[in-house]
Amino acid sequence: MPDGAVALPTFQTNLFIGGEFVPAASGATFEVLNPHDNSLLANVSEAGAEDIDRAVVAAQKAFKVWSKMSATERGRMIYKLADAIEADGPNLAMIETLDTGHPIRDTRNLDIMRTVQTFRYFAGMADKYEGSVIPVDTGFLNYILRVPLGVVGLISPWNFPLMFTSWKMGPALAAGNTIVFKPAELTPLSTMRIAELAAQVGFPAGVINVVPGFGNKAGQRLAEHPDVAKIGFTGSTATGRRIVQASAGNLKRVQLELGGKGANIVFDDANLTAAVNGSAFAIFHNQGQACIAGSRLLLQETIADEFLDKFLTLAASIRIGDPRDPTTEMGPLTSRMHQEKVLSYCAIAHQEGGEILLGGKAPDGAVFKDGCYVLPTVVKAQPQDRVCMEEVFGPFVSVTTFRDEEEVLTMANGTSYGLGGGLWTQNLTRAHKIAGAMDTGMAWINCYKRFHPGSPFGGVKDSGYGREMGFDAMHEYTEPKSVWVNVDANIPNFYPR
Ligand code: NAD
Image (tube, rainbow, N blue to C red; front, side, top):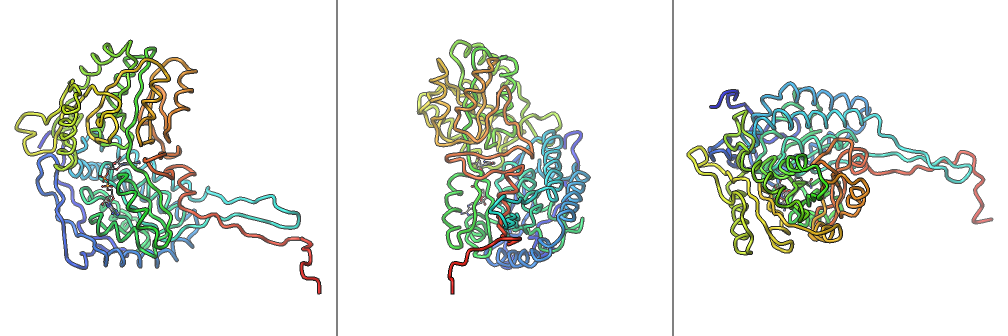
């Protein structure tokens, strides 16, 4: 084991329902693998429809307690959970590294910090999220309560499993809802550890239920469950569509954070050093497995060669290796299947006549032999090529050149996605103009992939609808209830008798 690594952390492997860790009703389990070498990490209980139903019943029961608790007290519980996550940081970071392949330097320094920060933000939000009073007709008082929805189903993907617990649980809990959380089948372990920590800090039984399992069984049942009021979903666009269909039975609310194909535009007046570094972070951080990755590099033709020279040098120098090693900058992709998908796009690039400038294959060497590694890959392509239109979700960036603002905007807005996009320029007028004209939920100027628990996060078009973070997230997890009171109104007599 590399220096600085810790022993295999302990984690729960059973379902968390009604405050207890229990096996699946069927007794079924599934394997969770370490993507560094595809060794077995754990056999985890696999939730089926019956387990989802049990979890919903537990959450319904807990709703009566949790929704009646004062908002301050709910916030206090969430603060305690944040403190427990912080204290467990080294353990949780190692769980996440083993389960996902994220380098330990990132899980320790970024994922833990961001998870704690987001839980704390929503802990503080619990008793600051207010209703309102509407100035209606004289003689009436009209006030708006923000009431919790009830039992919410939360479904997460495998790319940032720990961080997404806070994005989804934070606002849902702060608003007074109870939760049935289905983590991705590839990476359930950090979410299960969060459940354990929640139990330890004293969350009432059933407020948080965690039910690992497969999408087409556990996920599908949750999405169609008649007693679930909402699904908060992060994942692919195809699954998002299935969830919308499954939700129709009880017309539950659906919030969708889906895929992306972020345009990262570099103009000829950009600070090239900052743009090169920021663009590498935009695509290679977390092995490119980020919905907001800057996966389409659009370079103004006058600086394209100079930029590419520096960018390729930097990309080739990224330290790829065992994610437990604190010096590793890029680990394996999260699964063999996903590695194969990303490599298949290298073949597609060849077929389309694209030029592979860097990578395009798994790294050589004994350390990589059994793992899911892919080298940083840079492909020169045409805007209409599949590699420029489809989400690859790996360390794979397409490069295209453009002449002017008009042409680059057509390219940037030319995919079905609309999550995030960025641009690098020192021209203030151009910066605001292009940021405003991009069909995205988020735009970054002279930076990329910035987010914060207070700033709305989400997309448009095939990237979904609804927003995580901030007050927007609280709106997503509450219903406005309008209450009318006659305080001094002279009501006309409509039926004179
Ligand atoms: P996925 O859609 O395959 O799976 C996501 C989750 O949905 C998993 O928990 C899975 O078990 C579950 N699921 C699958 N089928 C289901 C069904 N029929 N009913 C209910 N649940 C079902 O996505 P993934 O491969 O895990 O994640 C990668 C995708 O997530 C990428 O497209 C990425 O862009 C997207 N993503 C989006 C955001 C965002 O905020 N917009 C963030 C991260 C990832």
